[in-house]
Length: 162
Image 1 (cartoon, rainbow, N blue to C red):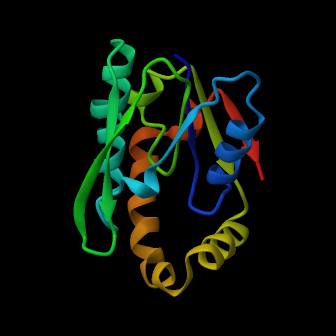
Image 2: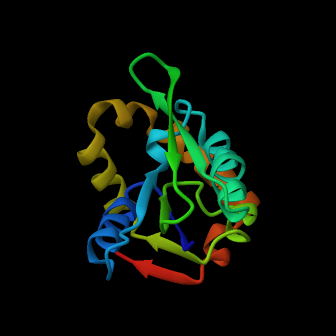
Image 3: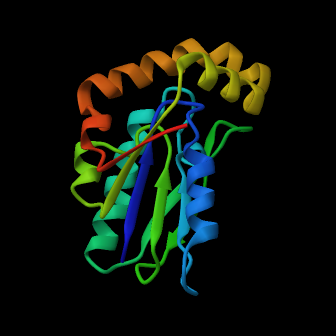
């Protein structure tokens, strides 16, 4: 099984890169893409989602067992259904917090996506609107703590400027 992690700050282009990887994959076995936006348990959930990737996806998959992830229902603020991930298929995990030291050790390829701060903020707010505008500083502070602790850019095997 091939595991690719894509990380970088909000609005840098991670989701677009993951989609291009999936759509351009050669062969019949296109990868499953897991978006951490679907897993974060709320606006303070970056670390929890990163740890869930390790515990529920990467460790089981590397042991040859199915992995799984639990969707967070942003409308209700509660955990929702579980989704299975087949260990026989390639996997791309994208999102802020995907590239921790623990996750990098279990991946085949780690990618850091970066963009100018003003560009990425404009992209993120255009994509997610007023709700994210209110939460931007809260999310950014959490992201910066993760970056200081995990140094994801240094863990990346490939850096992609957008």
